[in-house]
Length: 191
Image (tube, rainbow, N blue to C red; front, side, top):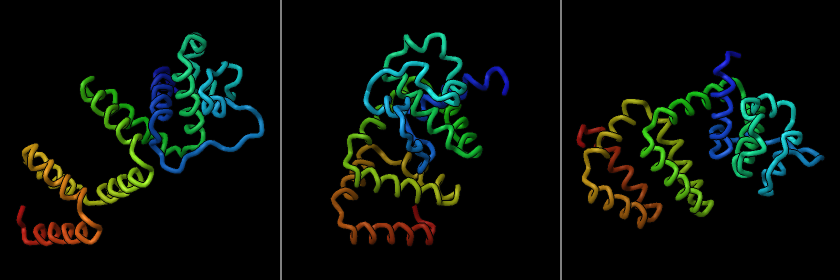
C-alpha cells in the first residue's frame, strides 16, 4: 500500500458510510458492542471500540479521531465495516467512484448531496423502483445510454417536466405502452 492509498481509502470509506456503493455488502453480526452497532445508535465511537481492521483502514484519522463529530465517526465506521466485506473488485470500484466524486466541482457535489437526501426521503418502494430503473439503464449498451442522455439534454426544462409528470401519473400498463413506443421510434431511427 503506497502512502497516498490510506488517505484515498479512508476518504472512500467516508463515502461508503454515506452511500452504499456495493449493493448487498453488509456488516456481519457480532455478539459484542461493535463500532458498527454504536454507529447505528447515533453515539460517538471511541478509537478502542473499532476493530483492528477498521483501525488500519482509518489510521490517517487516528490522531484527530476524538475530535471528529459523532456522525463523521459513524460514517467512517460504517464505511470501514463495509470495506472489510467487499471483494477487491468492489473496492476498486469504490476507489474509482470516490475519485470521480473528488473531480466534481463543489456545486455539482452539492447538487448530488441534495438529490441523495431527496432520494432517502422517498418511501422504500419508490427507492427500490428507482434502483431498478437505474440498474436497467446501466445494463443498456453504452451507445444507447449516450443517446438517451443526449435526447434528455436536448429537451427544454418544460419538456423534461412534462415527461416526468406523464410518467409519474401513468399506470403500469401506460408506462409499458410508453416504453414500447420509445423502442419502436428508436428502431425506426426517429428521435
